[in-house]
Amino acid sequence: MKDMSYRELWCSSPRFWGGLALLGFIIAVALGAAFFMEHSGHHVTGMTNQIVWGLPHVFAIFLIVAASGALNVASIGSVFGGPMYKPLGRFSALLAIGLLAGGLIVLLLDLGRPDRLIVAVTSYNFKSIFAWNIILYSGFFAIVGVYIWTMIDRKVQKYKIAVGYAAFIWRLALTTGTGSIFGFLVAREAYDAAIMAPMFIIMSFSFGLAFFIVALMSAYWWAGRELGGLRLAKLKNLLGVFVGAVLYFAVVYHLTNLYVTQHHGVEQFILLGGGVYTNMFWIGQVLIGGIIPLFLIYSPAFATSRFAIATASILVLIGGFFQVYVIVIGGQAFPMNIFPGKEVVSSSFFDGMVNGYVPTVPEALLGFGGIAVAMTLVAVGSRMLQVLPESLEDPTDESS
Image 1: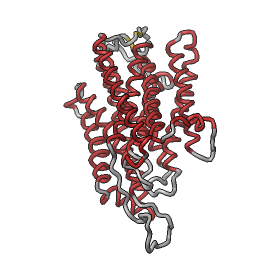
Image 2: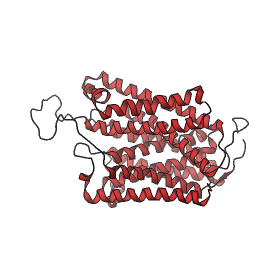
Image 3: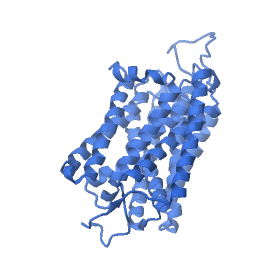
Image 4: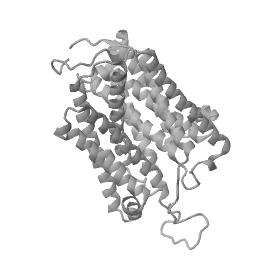
């Protein structure tokens, strides 16, 4: 196998520091938005007693799910022995850590009282799936951090495969835990489904790889390094498989719900009569996030087009965001059946009514701040660590 030379991401100073300054500005604005919401109370957001998880939660869950999938490339290289993916393992792991940190920061600042984080990480209620997730998130940082170390330091490279297996198993557990938050919530008809956990896993594969392709192309364009078309083609084809799998799981999820009479109401709401949520499902999730990317990926007309690969990846991310929005917000908007089998004659608690939600600007700013935090960590990490090969020109054969 050909030796690969790694080097820190070194751009001209105005380009690098200008990019960091922009990310820093977005983060500062997001912190201001979080401060405003924390001191004013959640009444300044679109959230209510019925919609308790709003737009920041959508950003947070989207980034956390994508973080697990961003580790795809490293796992394929070290666990499954894919030679074309091995040189990309370090950057894959760094991106995974950055995305998870960005998602968790959004979650932390949205929930309020971030000063009480120490209580959440030292007092566990093991009957709660949320407590399990704190352990999974902390463990992900530790294991992936060690994973990067074994890939960079030759003295500990002999442990790389073993740590790679541990990271692979842990990331599956992490995404299972995130999906199970919804799968275990029996009170919401849109959530109560065992398929949520595996569906979140395949969603993570798709979103994470799309993030990776966009970040990789941006980094090599930023640094003016060569990025061969053969590796991009393999990543593109793999993304197509994951996008198709996400569509398949969405079909199975809705068919399963349609088989159960109890869930006919929520299915009618999401698929036909839910207004903005129905539009987000068909136009955002299915068309923008599924059908158009598949056309761009597999159409012979775009076989060698880098623009098509980048566009398809970005559309997968946009569609994925819509998918998480429909799951999180749409699932809460549908009326919760407080008294199953009973008829509520009158109520002052909006029983039986579709819950309205309009996200506010501070919520959106906080969410974009999470993405900026993730990108800042990746940019600074790439500048300080040797995570990117000096050149990714096409090899003469696939074993190199």
